[in-house]
Figure (tube, rainbow, N blue to C red):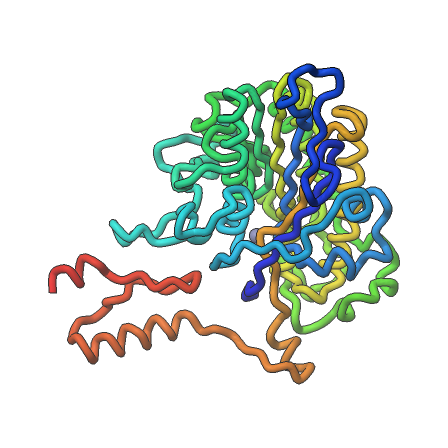
Length: 421
Ligand SMILES: [Zn+2]
């Protein structure tokens, strides 16, 4: 699916920021007028691929404790956009946390070409670090390619590094980039082992509590539950009927329909959990352990948990905007959010923390779905564009393969070849 929309939604609730004018109340009883009260904890939530409209599209079945609590108790920045391309996960998360754009923060896409070498680079790839907590290469990651500071770095600088910052997401890039350069830790999911892992950039061994969490083997338990709809399937009025031509199928499925028998399709790769609501559930389970075991919000300085829910993106890519699967994953995420806020009320204290929620990007409708409904649409044939571009340049300059790659709307030239002409 082609992702074309930029979507940034910001919702905050906090005892200290009482309106959009940012009225900051001084600490009661403090003689120093310039000292302001700060939240004990900030929780930044990114819902991967959440279109802004999902706040309202499924609202009649959201409870009061999730999305609606944010809307009712906080405020929305309805038209807050960071004007960046490409609207993909790495650039989106980095945009939110740096307030900047790829030309400045350096995260030009999920994968991009390093102009000096002409070689492809994964956004958080770092061959100088090792996986911690697993044997796969999934942990050879760090924020080394991030060129600017994040709000989490700035918090660290502002409190002389007494704040604790931890990043968490199934996706490595969703965990690493928001947590910045100075994070205490970032954790992400390893498909090979089903464990939460990290890298030597942050630590040399996983904390005991992470090992304990991993030893519960929750992914296995969730896969065994398979995925059926939360409510009777005929009540999903915001989506196309389940069996349709616009949805992808999980490997081993004959049709893209409920129930999705994850247990039957599981062949040892725990990555299957990503394309189901259990990926978000597992992220929440892990985040609650972070809060508890790392004593987030219990210190003297403001702590920051960055939390990204990745399964909305995997489900969105597989099934599309108008799918029952997508509707279902948001109805369940709403419950996950309510659970998270209830937990924060108890562990940090109601009114003592600030939450914001945003999205790294949105998603477009399936082009065939649009065409079938008489809406002009089509695909952007990137591979033929690269071929045509090189042919046109070859005709002009008598040199083959002047363009190395074309991706994420970026043309990368073979600079060495051009220099040598
Ligand atoms: Zn994303």
